[in-house]
Amino acid sequence: MYGLIGKMTAADGKRDELIAILLEGTGEMPGCLSYVVAKDPDDDAAIWVTEVWDSAESHLASLQLPAVQEAIGKGREMIAGFGERHETEVVGGWGLDG
Amino acid sequence: MYGLIGKMTAADGKRDELIAILLEGTGEMPGCLSYVVAKDPDDDAAIWVTEVWDSAESHLASLQLPAVQEAIGKGREMIAGFGERHETEVVGGWGLDG
Image (cartoon, rainbow over all chains, first blue to last red; front, side, top):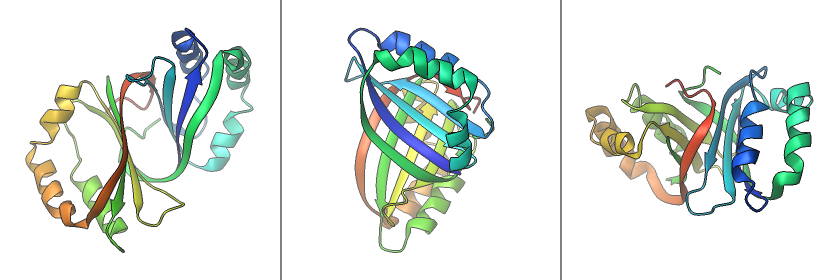
């Protein structure tokens, strides 16, 4: 399984709106086993997204889904920047039923 | 919801064994919505653990569960150290059914 742990920074005052777009643009995506959006309690602008996919290919393919493309289009201007980003090899756990 | 993103470093050659203990010690835990264990592909010793709980209290309480206590006891000597650790406020997503 393929995992992603990433941090992004929202534009001023846009975090909640950006989170709503992230959640709404990411409904059922083929191969997506987990997709979690979280606020950083220490930084009013920061968002953590942790993802698990059956494969890196499924993640890449998801970026072409119409709903994801629309979310990217709507969210792009609300993103001030990206922080750390880690690709991982997910071994197992709970909550991986998609 | 309460989230944790953390990195740990296994003692030399002990990563797979430590991962097995992490996975086996963390069966059904009250309030645990997601628990994902992953290898860092860029560091042979590094493990990422990402967790989602219904509350910080549930996470704290889990540390007292017999299975978790046993895992901590068995795994402790295989951990060389801890890396970054982020507490988050999880807002939503997929794969949060526990």
